[in-house]
Image (cartoon, rainbow, N blue to C red; front, side, top):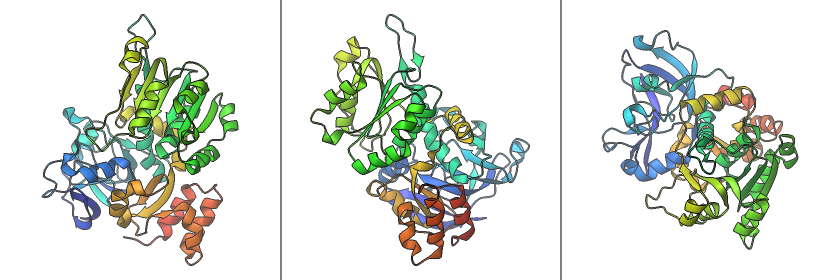
Length: 420
């Protein structure tokens, strides 16, 4: 059968094209994609091409499908997986397969499976690693956002603390501790704030920093200080661009000698160094945001690593358990990653959006893979609606939901947007 997809042939070479999928084998599954959100990791892969650790060498001859935050329906099941998976079921995928010690992942490494497509063939190893996950919520976009949320879940779980005089690694955030999310008003930072406020382990104080006043204002609108207080968390937003001495001010804001857990949400050396300087004794810094520069480095105080027992961890993606946790928390309405989304578009918009992602303001860019639409900011729906009733209706739906994407908006778009 034919599919339409965006494939990578090399550095900065993404092509929107139609081609034939192979027939599935007995250990494969044919699936139809509905939604895929674009990750900065896809931008990094597109800029690096085969130099990226997950991308094969031969993509010029055997291009790979991009996109790894996707949700859809199973169309046909090979005999090996009959009974475990059924036609018509919704699914999402954990792309970090960790299959036989490789970094191979859907959206980076495979010819026939990636989120920026209408139809795909899911290879055996996805099911072998239990990374094809059932999904039973109404809106597909939650399934797409479960992957980025799983990255945050994994980062929180990877942090650790070691009581002095022991070698016991106590995994996770310090309960009732102090926490800082630096450069934290972007989409992944907002997800981290959501999880910190509504997860099983919460800090008593959470400081969120950024240098963009508009993003900080939006963050506070989404997560008001008064609402955080109801969760038992003292939440503070700080624009570090306005501080003469950000490090001294942040340490003072911690209320102690620094922060127990610090998350770095931007690959910027001064932010990393700032995080290092504001750690408390036995504090843990998580370098969350992956850089494109393979030589990226920053100054770290090894005196404090030795005498103050500072810890540094880095996480790249989550695992299947992290994704199951994020799916369950969304189902229970404990977290809502909808506020991450600031733009929606069709499959046709993927190449340009991916290649220019850092230049596009806002948060997550959500793609509906079976429609033809330009990437459009939610805040621009009303203006476009002056001349187009389709956008006018979407503007009305999102306005009734505090300008946040939602299941009603998705259902309307899927029913009324022009097809690919």
